[in-house]
Length: 190
Image: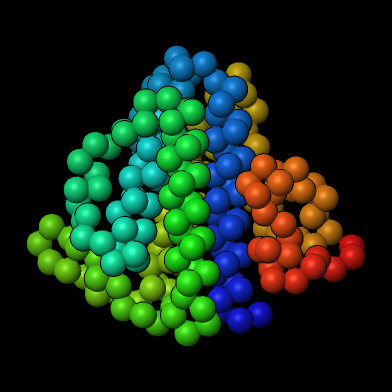
C-alpha cells in the first residue's frame, strides 16, 4: 500500500466517521444537542463545532490559504446539527480533494500554517496525521457524550475491513462513494 492510498483511506474514514456521528446526532432534540455534558468542551454542539473549526484552520493552510487563527473567531459557527452536517461534509470533501491531489509524492510538500505570532512550516503528511488524530480524539469525546442522550452512539472504530463492505454500503452510497473509489480497486471477496 502506497502512502497516497493510505492517506486516501484515512481521509475517507475520517469523513465516514463524521457522517456516522452527525447522522446519529440528527436524532437529538436541540435541547439535547446543546445540553451541558462532561468533556473537554461543555456540549455536543461545542465539541463538534471545535472539530469543524480546527479542520477549517488546517485545511485552509493545506490549500495555500492564510485564514490562520481567524478560523476560530467564532468557536460555534453552526447552531444546529443540520448546519453542522452540511459544513462538516463540505470540509471533509475538501480534505479528500487535498489527499487526491497530493499523489504519491505530494505529502512531503511544505505547508505554511499561519499562527498568530509566526508561520509554522510543516510537511503535508505530518499535518494530515495531526488533523486525523485531532478528529479521532474529539469524536471519541462526542461519542461518550452521546451515550448520555436518548440516541445510541454509532460504532466508530471500524476501519474498512474488506469483509465489512456490505455493512457500510448504504452509508457509502449516501456519501457518493464506492469501495473502488476509495481504494482504487474493487473490494476483494470476503
